Length: 516
Image 1 (spheres, rainbow, N blue to C red):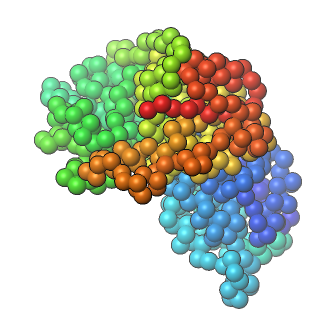
Image 2 (cartoon, rainbow, N blue to C red; image 1 turned 180 degrees about the horizontal axis):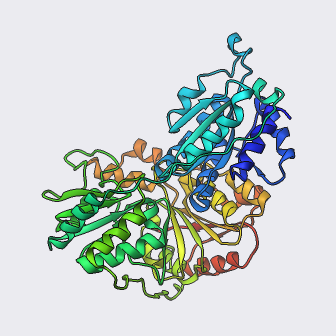
């Protein structure tokens, strides 16, 4: 057994069952070792950003890490954007980055770089494996760190000679640190605030947006007369008919301030106080109303469910939660595909237990409202703001949950960052419906330009935000990568194609031409 084979055995012993990668010469030992562990699924991505995004989607749904395989510093650099999103989502991931042999680095070969420095841009734990003697322990430590609450991106640097060296000894097992327990004093203080009768709201994120915690939070809200809110871009929100109602904060900070203007106590549960995505002239950086006090019941690394349960006990909140009612909108008939008809089309067709990956940006803002009363489903968002996550995260979610239909809502500009994900979806025969919302522009930037007070863009600025001349042809791109693809221009045609895709095995691409 060599070092790479020992790495595979250690991954398997610690519950890692998926490797998504894009290898190079320095990773050949790793690739060869995959044949020694048929229990680990190996998936090829044609771009590192697809590999890291897929690991993000997998980790969000599986609640355990996938491993990525990346080629030296440049390969890691190519994957950083979606690792940034994964870090913001608190997704457990273990990156394996191949490195030159230890004796070769002193010659400064062309692909040599400071991999650890690159990794620190989006990884919360990094280690170079210096010897085959420490390899199994290093791998176990990386898995353990990735699973440390609330979830972390970790990176292992694997020199080629460590991978090919002879290895002996038993595989090491990870010792995972449990989520921290919130003190009783904190629970009692929050209970006192909620009993005061002053307007209050619970702001939830992370694991607090899973159904068990949502049910307790909703009971608390009904008992105390407090609102139950969630972050603008949750990593994973369990929602739909029969699940608790939760208000999602809007994107624009002025809208957040208006929504919670009367709140005097904002109580954070695995969440952070809302801030503006960007700074604007004369605009607020924070989205907390003046005079509102911010309190923390559970920090991101705390056991939020246990804290909520103890808070419910302190308040005597034993009643029923406020549940979402069944509300299936009628399918739209004819007409252009616009934000309202898009939401209605999704709501009329969404299959039970679906997973929606939302990178719809400007067009899909009504989709959550249109689907709130559908059968239970999960909603995954763009947590870090770095576009190009939609298609890869959908790929990873489908790898984690092969028995569920995944729907990727992606803007045309965002989809072009990681369009290669379609090829992986086709090769792996994943049940994904990719809806490309083609408005032929970076529409979100037109909005941001107006918010900056710059007015309508001039001719040069306009062409920097425009995706025509030539127009992108997603039907041709999808077919070229083995994904059955079509184009629709009306809302009822979209409904028909959505239903057809859900009844068909494997991936589908629907290019929906948007009228705004």
